[in-house]
Image (cartoon, rainbow over all chains, first blue to last red; front, top):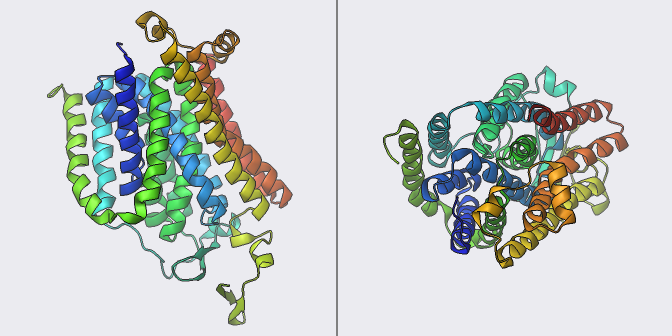
Length: 282
Length: 149
C-alpha cells in the first residue's frame, strides 16, 4: 500500500464529497465510500468496508443527536428492532470474512442499485391511515405520537406487522455488517412499508438505529485488522465535515434536481461494482 | 405557542401546549424523559466530537512524523486493545487514531447503556430487558472475534 500525503488528502476530499452528497440526496454517505476506496484508490474491498463502517457510525451519531432531541425518534421501536439489526450485523461481519471479494463487489453493486430505487419511487406514506396495532405492538408499547412541525400538532400512530418488520430488520443488519453501509433504505423499508410508520418517524428512527447496528460489526472489523487507521481517519473526518456542510446548504438547494442528476451516477457506480466483481472490468 | 390536538376517549380536544407538558416524563411518548433524551443526544454528540478530535490529532501527528507514511510503519497498525494501549504509551500516531476510532465505535454502545438506565428510571422493566439484550449482543460482537482471532 503506497500512501502519500496527497493520497490521504484525496481520500479526505472524496469523503467530504460523499458526506455532502449523502446529506443532499438523503442516502447515507457510507454507500459511496466503498466504491470510492476500491474503484478509485484500489484498496482491497475488506479494508474499504472497514473504513466505511466507521464513517457510518460518525454520520449516524451526529445526525441522530438532533432527531432524538426533536422527539421524532421512537426510542422503543428503535431499541426493540436493534435486537434484530445487531444480530444481523454480527452475522454479516462474519460472512464478509468468509466470502470472496468478488462476491462482495457483486452484492455491493446490487444493494446500491436497490438503494437507488427509493430515490425514484416514493416508498411508504407520510401519514399512513387505518393502521391498527398488532399483538406485538400492544405488548411492546410501540404506538406513540410525534410533533409534526408541518401540521403544527402532535400526530399519534399505531404499528402493525411487527414480526415481519423484525425479520426485515435482521436482513438490514446483515447487509450493514456485510458491506459496511448503514443500509438505511432497508431499515426504512421495514418500518415504512411493512410496519407502516409515518415517514418522519421511520426515517429518523432508522438513522438512530444505524449507529448501533454499525457499532456491532465495527468492533469485529477493528479486531480483525480490517480498519486501517491511516485510511479510516481521513474517511471519518471527511464524511463528518461533508455531512455538516450538507445539512447547512440543504435548505438552499432543491434536492429533487440533485436526485435526478445523481441517480444515473449512482447506477453507473453500482454497475461498475458488479462488473469489477465479475472480472469484466478492472 | 403551538396548538395541540389530543385524541382522548371522549373525543378530540384542543388545548394550549404548556412547556411543562412538553417536558413530562412521556414527552412525545418516545420512551424517554426529556432529560434522558437530552443526555442521550449529548452522549452521541459529545462522543462524535471527542473521537474526531482524537482522530484528527493522531492523523496530524502521523503526517508530521517524517517516516509516518513509510510502508514499513503503516504495515503494522494496532488492531487489538492491548496493541492500541501499548502504542498509546509510546504516543504512536496510529495508536492515537485507533483510540479515536474505538471511542467512535463505543459512542453508540454508550448510548445503549444509558438507555438501560433511562428505561429503569421509567420503571419500564420490559425495555430494560430488551435494551440489555442489545448491549449484550454488542459486547458479544467484540468478544466473539477476539476469541476467534
